[in-house]
Length: 73
Image (cartoon, rainbow, N blue to C red):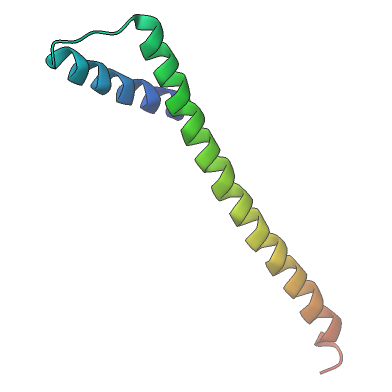
């Protein structure tokens, strides 16, 4: 999945910054960071999709309402 790959890239960049600063972390911490980043991306995507679904639902409701009065005009 693209999000997993993107999360891994962010994690690798963070690892590089940590190591360039002369520090280090256990591999397990980097794995956890990657999972947290991926979860954040997924949460943001779900939130955006829910907002889009609400808009589509409103549009469908408006179309139904307009259709009810279409023959009346």
